[in-house]
Length: 423
Image 1 (cartoon, rainbow, N blue to C red):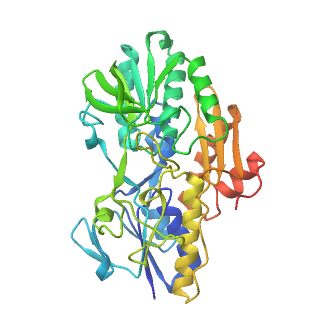
Image 2: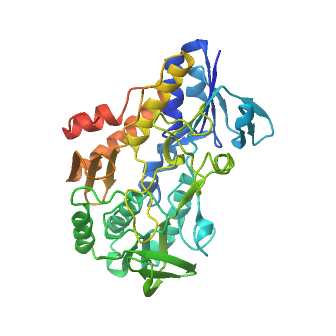
Image 3: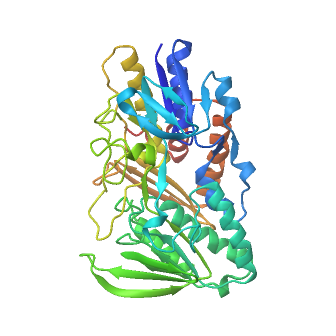
């Protein structure tokens, strides 16, 4: 009997657990280790931060559906991966051995890389539901005494979609509260242009976001390096294509939310220089296997993906839902093949799909492949994107509560958009 352990139980780890159990049956053991007993649907965090969602609407207890599927569950987290011994040290001091390991931990949030940055400093975050709830507490106080907003992402970030979403969601919430006229907004980003999103743009995403920002009185600074955050003020350096400072901005704010850069979580980063990149992300081959430890696979944000193109400031490539689903399917297929003594054949398709709520409308993007030139560079805007995102939030939560393994992005979103099946 083989034992497959998954570290992480979010949008990558939880589907991986269900699909592995379905593929392997009761002849093999599947376990999940998480650092929390609760599943949270991370894409809904921007809504939580303005009060459009509550925690209870986007979360559920992990243990019941996992146990119902015959999957063991540990919520203590992992302090060390002892890969040479095929063993985990859990945070409670116990050990868990494995034959195959799936790393789906997500990232470590690198707030410490900018002085005064993050929830322990002077800016808000929507990266976790806890952060989003704290951001909402600050938001309610802000609405009573509004002022300037600074929103965006810092250098090294790779998840730009939520920053654009949150800027536009705040814009809409402020209009509903009838205080938008008292709130100057500035979008700050290391991207070389608005709408780059770590993808080199998709279709006319540059024109779309610039147009939306202009129509909604949102100013922007690109090629922006955040140097320091102080109470009510952010120091930002605008750089040229050689990363040399051409202008320094002192931006006042009463409310700020900035997406941080990511690093690999400690237990993954501790695997060693050959197994992870300098940021601590897991290096994987074409089959999602680690390049040093072939019985370790990686899924989602925790893996190393090179940037789409060189930029003046570091801008990472995003890992979107469809891409994570593709990684998960390849990982399940290849672990199953390895256990059964078959040749590995399944390769993920790292295509990018994004659904963005823009407050008063929505935008959808598809990039196949992620790196240009592309076979598909598709972009549409409209209220139907908002409705689609809400529908898929509910659908994904329904699936995960019940352990349904039907692919959600490929069969549902692409059918809805009328796009041919991606390779």
